[in-house]
Length: 94
Image (cartoon, rainbow, N blue to C red; front, side, top):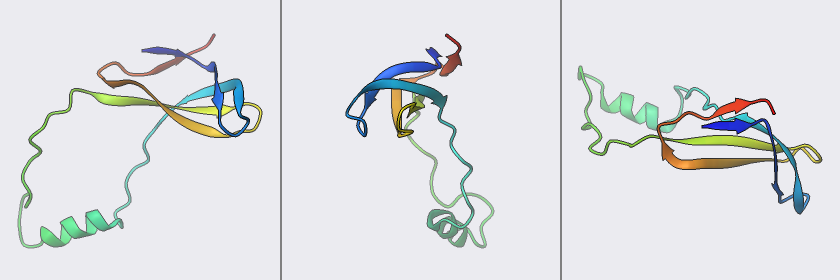
């Protein structure tokens, strides 16, 4: 799915439609210190494989997320495009 690098969108901070720059959302790598990771490691002590079972549901595709940043005030909002889709979000110049 192709997306332009600048869009007019509503900014809740400015309370009007302004020009926003579009950037792809990139998830940061998880830290090894979060509670879920620590709990799973503790549960897995002494075992070779997984303790909990595999996921039963197969996701149809990922949600494509973009970050819109207001050019006037710098406020950032997240926007999900297309629900679950197999198409990747791609930013193109105008």
